[in-house]
Every structure is written in C-alpha cells, then in structure tokens.
Image (tube, rainbow, N blue to C red; front, side):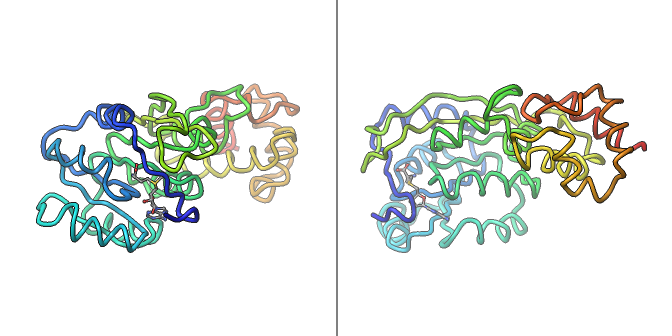
Length: 266
Ligand code: SAM
C-alpha cells in the first residue's frame, strides 16, 4: 500500500453498492474505471455486464488484476500507468466511454476530471468518490466560498450533485478526511455555447485568480486585461449589470454569460 498513490480501499459493501447503483449502468455500456486498486468496485461493474477499461498506476495491483482477479474475463481490459498520461491515447482510439467512475486520490481527482472536461471527453454519466473538499467544490453553487473554476468547468456540461458522504472508517487504511460520492449527469445542452467556450473559460480563470480581489482588479490583471482596454472591460461589466467591486464567487452562469457576451461584442 502506498500513501503516494492515495491507496485507501473501500471495504464497506454498502458504500460500494451505493456507488454501483448511482452509476445506473445499462447492459454492455463502456465504462472507464480510474484507480481500480485490487478491484473492489470493478467486480460490481463487471457483474452489471459493463465493458470495463481500468486505469491503474500501481504495477503490483496491475499484476493482481491481470493475473488473478480478472484473468480471462473478456469484458475487462487494463491500462497500466498514470491515467493522466494514458487516457488520451485510449480516448483517441476508442472515443469517449458511456460512463466514467473512480475512487480517486485527492492529488489526481480534480486534475483528472478537469482534463476530461477541458478535452471534451464527456461521458453521459460520471460518478467519483473524492476527498470531501474536492467533491464539494465540484458541486458548489454560486455565492458559496467553494464556487470556483472547477465548479464552473464541471457545471457547463453536467448537472453535478452529491450522492452520499463516506466516512473514513469505510476505507482501509482509514483516511483522515471524509469522502463524498459525486454524480455528474450530462446536460442535454451545455450552459455555454460552443463558440463562446474559450473566451468564457479564460474570463472565468481571470475572475477567480485571487478570490479576495474584485472582478475589476482580477480582469485587469489577467489575460483579459491584455486583450481588452480598461474602457472595454468596464463597459462590459456595466452592460452585464455586474458592479466593478463584486467578487467572482457571487457570479452565476447568467451573469458570467452576459459579461462574455458583452466582451465579444465590444
Ligand atoms: N478503487 C479501489 C477501491 O475503491 O478500493 C482503490 C481506490 S484507491 C483510493 C485509489 C487507486 O487509484 C489506487 O489503486 C491507486 O494506486 C490508484 N491511482 C493513484 N494515482 C493514480 C494515477 N495517477 N493513475 C492511475 N491510478 C492511480
């Protein structure tokens, strides 16, 4: 067991069942599982007749998965190595799976999810077990201290909501913090039109650079400040009805969209 790879096995059968149920798997769906460990969740996925591609970094676990746990299981395939490096090739060759799930270590979880979203690898459904703080950020709402670039990136394409909290004791070894299971259901239509997406994400990045600073200061200091004149930025804030002294954490999707619309027409 290695701390470095965030290895805490989910040993609670009821928590495992809860996660499997929340995936709402249908016959023969293609599923990616990130960090299968020695297969606690994988068993449930295979029992649902899903076609599972599992991404695991630990070579010892990979040997167990390949040579013992799922030997000769035709609907199981293993991609050995760091998922952050291995997934793009699988995506390129096989396209996006129907479902993505994983019990992810905190240092990989948010980066992995952000990469899938940025590269538009958008499965119909994703369910992640994450350190509570990361999960709460994904599902945060405007006005909350946790409303952030990650919440916004995720909620453009997905309805994000918590399924349940999992206490440390459900894992072995028990981590110091609680975890949360987060479900992400793809929206029929993204909240941001495809043609505005790049500018939208850049403006959001700028706005959240320093949470304590006003939207005015963050925009001026960010990339937007080099793309637009001060007047253009101030006019656009005014057109969008956003006070210059506002903080980014209070801006919801309609406000952000109005600002980006105003900026694209200056
Ligand atoms: N899914 C198992 C369970 O629920 O019992 C194990 C979960 S454990 C919290 C996280 C798993 O992710 C470990 O098996 C670990 O080796 C794997 N892992 C950590 N970093 C990884 C990475 N960058 N790429 C792929 N797997 C990774």
